Length: 393
Ligand SMILES: *Cc1c(COP(=O)(O)O)cnc(C)c1O
Image (cartoon, rainbow, N blue to C red; front, top):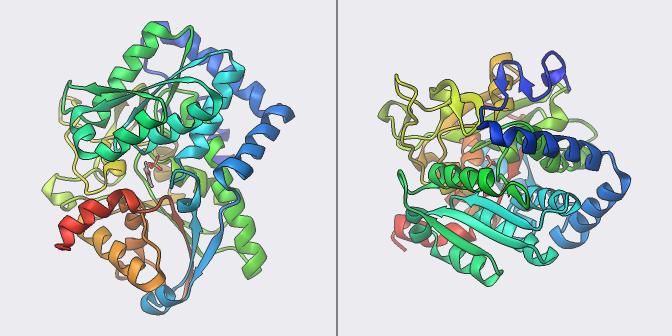
């Protein structure tokens, strides 16, 4: 694709690369080679597509939103990743990586998780394949997302609470990386987003690119043209890059929405593309939230899945090239969109996805009457308890 053509493998412009301990380099080389082999192997592709159809539930529908369109003065369609098995797009990637691990003869899977959605998706696929699964999760997140801890246990996974640092996602990632360095011979590390060292950003994008491929085709079939605008939320960036990828060479305007938390000026947010600087985090060079010494800053978002100080390298390049516009919406704006979508369309989005919808209400952002396609990355069941507290139900 245009975004990669000018640079070396594993780089998106200056971004990406592999900033990892030397012991991991052979494992990343092996993973890169095996991924490329598998991805061009019709047998592997057929198995991926078969399970995507009959286990995950693909293709997911495209829904026209009449009442939401009336309310916003736009023509809104929604890609329904909330209807994937386990309730979000994350299983597309977990399925791809576990299939790959199996074909590499690795029977132990490790993963990190924040809200628990990636942990649940990975534990689910491991149950399906009969693989051993261990999930690193910050102690703080274990307490906040107890239901997902129970889910993972029920699915046969071992949940390892992480007590270092802020006891959240970035610390879980550090611990998982440490485990992988030690056990790399029999273990595959399933990273849950399009971040991390090469080949993860490319590999995760390819496993998620089915979202944009389907959505583009469905949209054109129904409307006889491409959408004017595509919108997705950006945490680590996997649903957004999977959705955007099919449109990169088109004229469709692409908007990535980050977690603005309590507002960018407050410093309490998780918006590295809107308010960060390039630096190295979790093995990759990309925009991140850091202090003057390059130390990672604490983040805040009402949505646990967007509460991450870094972002996938390809997004950094797309930002610098000006191909994708990145912006942030606040917790309050996302919560308003969450409520409105439920009231107007009978759709309860994940708090993460509600950030993408909030862009529809931003004054002056999208031209009135524009045809907008929003990627609904997941459903909001997991967020109902928090929503009930916040809304005083
Ligand atoms: C995890 C998650 C996200 C954020 O992750 P990305 O890698 O940025 O997609 C977004 N939406 C939902 C529903 C999630 O579970």
